[in-house]
Length: 322
Image (cartoon, rainbow, N blue to C red; front, top):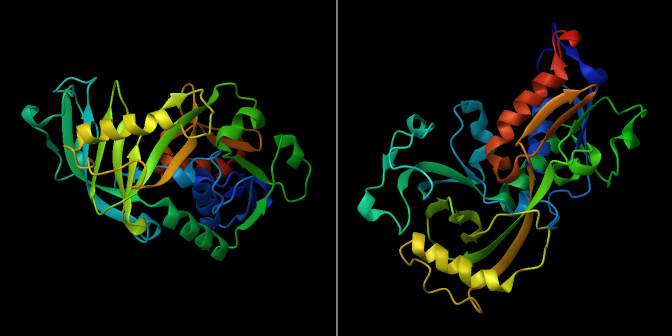
């Protein structure tokens, strides 16, 4: 266990994490790493297939993290893939801040861009399969002594005054709208399809349209998407969107999925609500509560960085400085 010399633990060495999505799990792991006793309380736990939380359904396309210590947490559920990104709302010479992170980063020549796209580039990235990663992460946390409690909370006050409360980490995603009384929290509807095939490239198109192809190698197929519908919390499959999604995917993949018959080749239609927030990600401490929510579609990308910041807010050298 790491030494806690010259450090003070808020909450007397115990942390309660509210939420078991990728942000909550990552925060729990980060806090357990520095010696806190951690309990996760959540309405949905890994293994639940509710559309009311997005972690099981996420595209989960990652860029490599520069810290080599993160490798073990990713390697069992990740795969290297060639990623191609297209945009129709950026100039051809627009700067890409992460260009230097990828040795094989290269621009797509204009003649190879899909119709309407103004910018394209490719690189080798990582993709996570949540169906493998979330159970693995749960097992890892249990081995660290993290406890899981399945319970729906209606307010943070329900945990106040309990002997085991300690510091609270509010990683409740969409639930933060009610728990944190934050009216900026908004559900953003996504709809995708899972198709079995061995296609091994990731493609993303952003701007006026939002669609993508993301391989799921451990699951034996790909995710075809999608839509981003802020404020729409309908969890039923929109049948009219299925053909539209497939048509758009074929336009960016040079017809790679023209063989797909929507009536027979789609293994699963997926609808999930991304936990977005007007103004973006919110990570802040208020009293004994550290809030960490609002990642929207970027939960897997932000999770390690958010967990590190939450750890900093929960474990401090000088309590008065937090």
